Length: 191
Image (cartoon, rainbow, N blue to C red; front, side):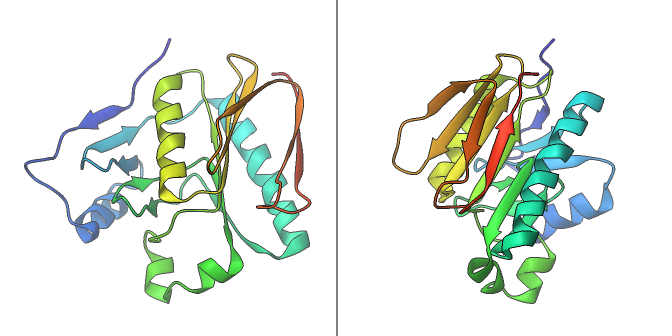
């Protein structure tokens, strides 16, 4: 059963960036995102299988990053302020060292005003595929260079690259970090 996250239309009572940050800090038991239209999205928690898969993806990305020291890895708890004004939380993200270090300490401490270089979204059993595909396109429009939408329900992964059509591969498959994550390789098994 697909359960859509709760979306609140706040167009007549917009939240400033600081107010949105405080709302998130005051309600840490909830996971919030904010669309470019100012809609507040309250995300539901994931189940054990999705949480385990997400953790494995973050671990693999983090191990590669520790070995290369090329940037910084982020979990799904991180909210990024995208250039279009949306506040989004990919399931895993990575930012090149020079780009991250160009942010001020204050920008890094709160919701960083930067689009990651790389994102992963993992579709849980309750996620609507079209919603996630739209989110991936939003990432690409914001400047993300490479993104993977892992879809265990269809046994597929969608690969998003700047200026290219989406590539769909069936699982199992081996993914490459290409020129964004040099030397990073991930084998996705069938789920």
